[in-house]
Amino acid sequence: MNRSPKLTRHRCGQPTLVGMDGDLAALTVTADPYPLNIAGEVAALRAGRRTYQLFRGALDPRDRWNIPGHPPTADLTVLAEHRCRDLIPAGWRRPPTPKVIHRPTESEEIPF
Image 1 (spheres, one colour):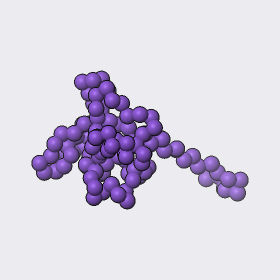
Image 2 (cartoon, helix red, strand yellow; image 1 turned 120 degrees about the vertical axis):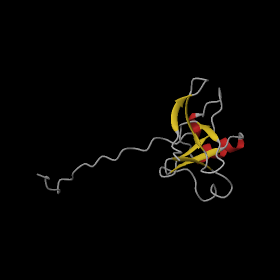
Image 3 (spheres, helix red, strand yellow; image 1 turned 30 degrees about the horizontal axis):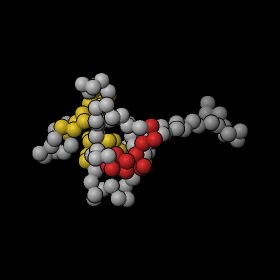
């Protein structure tokens, strides 16, 4: 069974990820494609939104067992449930991960 979420445009016009939330007795879930920061996940939960982690290419629901001790990081992408006309505020979003550019030092040999 392929649980990979698909990037689609929701009927409200916003981009969303749609996928199954489990392997057995799964429900179709819709999440906003913006990774959350720690405060963003707390705010989303307080606003009554479910949160999901992208794990092995699938949307897995987060709950009281896997939220504590496993905050959103660059290695753990957490997304909030989509709500039409209720966009994820910029303060909830994780900043983009900077790309690491390797710059040779003066003591490094030229690779050719």
